[in-house]
Image (cartoon, rainbow, N blue to C red; front, side, top):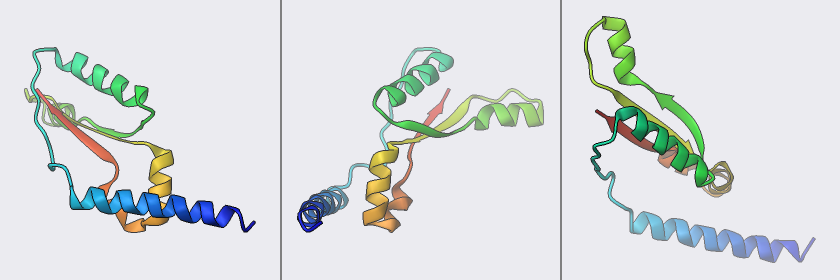
Length: 111
């Protein structure tokens, strides 16, 4: 049992160091990209890219289509897709429960 603790402690220090580095060098809050593909193709490619990188889709909000249905009006597509790597999320949350405010990753798509 004693041999496991130093390894766990080292892993904890490495992860905490990475976490503090990330917060000090925080990336931009968002980036913007445009494409000429159809909306359906963009959404399909986004979902595929998320799952191919070992992330799990945790939510999908179809705001534009819900507004169209509710109000019976023409309204553009607006979607948000939430995703995260659950293994990494579990480790991070065990180390820092307050980091939940940074989860999950969120991508907004609009036509």
